[in-house]
Image (cartoon, rainbow, N blue to C red; front, top):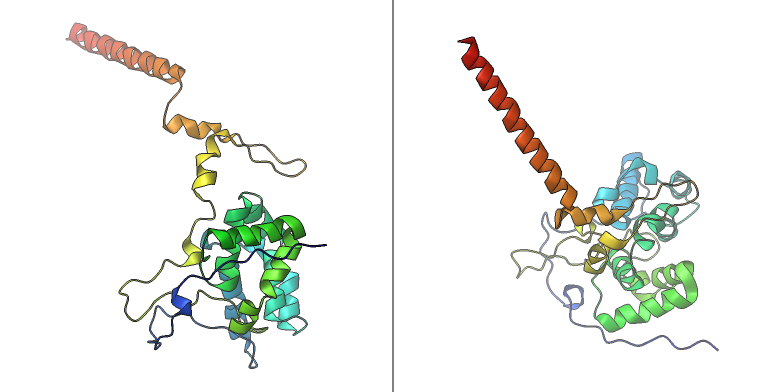
Length: 245
């Protein structure tokens, strides 16, 4: 018998506030396949989907899912299926899922799939339980098939950050695509963690980052040797110049 999902109360956010829309350069451009798209428009839609799922620093050709792109272009899958495939891809797993705890990963997925910030810590906990019990595939399926996703984006619209800018605000919220995929918890543990790759992958020890705060004592000794040695060489050159005169 499976447990009922943990309940949480939505907090007041921009996308939940009724307001008159004032369109401008800061407003997101909506990409969908409801109408027949030209080759260039389809390219823009696919690029928008990659940009929504991956961080801007992760927009690399090696992360492209060409098979999914081909299916989307030929109409074999919907935009919703394309988004699911990108989030479940090996690249997204390695770059986001493997290097974050469940709470941070849930926050990133809600930002990039539902287009909003998490409401509170209780929502993080609720979706983290889904992730822990149903696994990555079950969590992404539950999130992308949720009523919130379907009511805002449906089957044919690429998710976007909903109402990042309000008319009453001079500066909008920071785009999710520019936020780092690491949180404070991961950054605090970088000096003691080691990256674990697949078979045959190299292991990188990040304890070297600790040098930025407390350099090893041997570096100070090496610096002293270089300083005194350089001074001695300069003194000998100066004495040679005097003897030459």
